Image (cartoon, rainbow, N blue to C red; front, side):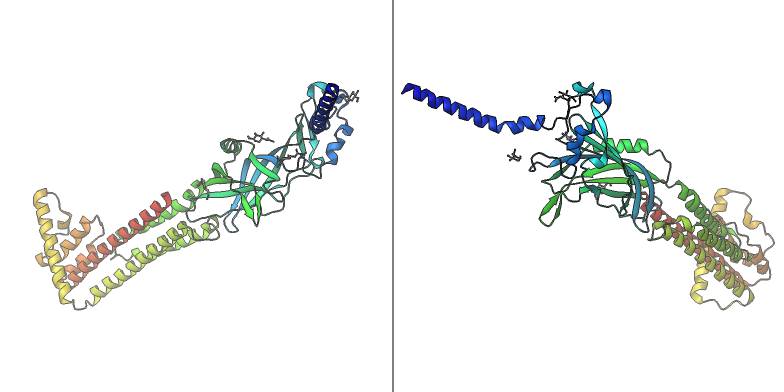
Length: 461
Ligand SMILES: *[C@@H]1O[C@H](CO)[C@@H](O)[C@H](O)[C@H]1NC(C)=O
Ligand SMILES: *[C@@H]1O[C@H](CO)[C@@H](O)[C@H](O)[C@H]1NC(C)=O
Ligand SMILES: *[C@@H]1O[C@H](CO)[C@@H](O)[C@H](O)[C@H]1NC(C)=O
Ligand SMILES: *[C@@H]1O[C@H](CO)[C@@H](O)[C@H](O)[C@H]1NC(C)=O
């Protein structure tokens, strides 16, 4: 009876052992069965037969349990920013992409083969993850016959250079002081999250630092930084893993400042200064005409430097400069016409204008007198013409003094000569013209400075 009990227990033990043994062989086997015998690799080179079983499996995702997703770690180095095309919204860059994953069918013991830890294998003999860049808008020109490094632990490192022409939402409003933020999304074509997961091969700041070190070119674009996000992409019921890298780049504006903004600024400054040319001499309108012509030629020549599409702020700025020049030319023409009209056949002055002018003259006259008193006996330029009747003086002097106060050095000689003939009406009209000119000059300056400040503030924001 007791022996039977013993028998039973022994049988149970055997059964348990058997079951345990049955359960464990695949696990022991999974490390043993796929171990590559690397004896002699250090003496006779790698034996292709040893890797044949791995090569034969390249059509399939290298996993032992198909419920386990393959983890592919990705990193890249941005080695050049080749082109940014605002018209077709494309960024062309050059990447060195690194991918790491584990192949459980590869492993060997480095001690058996003289410490051989990694060997390179032609990549077409291995399973490669189908990682692509979502924004890629070109055929992949990756050179064929690249190799991958295989480590003794089964970790595979595959590097490939890629010229990436990616679509990017480019905003050129702030040209040439613009920054762009382009996205490079790495994702798998085929494998959903339960088949393939993406990880980072390097920290993102490392990627950014390496890229900044590598991009030595002093091209138009400068790398500001790289950040990442890892939202998963849902297409229907399937979920794909993806990593988005945001590449922030900035244009180096020096070329455009020197070739576009500085010359344009000079021309508009000269246009403003040309208000100091005496309107009576008739030089002003031709001068402004020449300036306008020069500006048009400048715009034509520099058109190539501007972005071919969109409306950047700089175009608005140029249009503004051009319209300021046109307006100041029109002003010069109008005043020349007015001055000519009032000196040849002065029309009757409206009563309100007459009293307004007289009032203005009286005020400026008082001001001038008080200035003279405080200044003492300084030489007064107003007295230079000298030989004039008091009436003439009363009519003309304030006008020229007003011009003088505005820092307007325009000559008053020609009207003064007419004054000598004693025509108070003409004098008043002449004064009116000069006042109008000064007034319009100030309006012009005000408009110019306010619009320039607006543009500059927009640019610097
Ligand atoms: C590896 O192969 C060599 C001959 O190529 C053989 O002598 C050796 O026993 C093998 N090692 C193992 C662990 O199978
Ligand atoms: C395969 O992996 C899944 C998930 O990890 C696990 O539930 C299952 O038992 C594994 N199958 C085998 C045969 O190991
Ligand atoms: C991928 O990265 C993770 C986290 O850094 C690491 O644990 C894992 O071993 C890496 N895998 C490969 C295949 O490089
Ligand atoms: C780029 O855009 C993304 C998303 O729109 C944003 O998360 C990221 O901070 C931006 N990067 C820079 C440098 O502006």
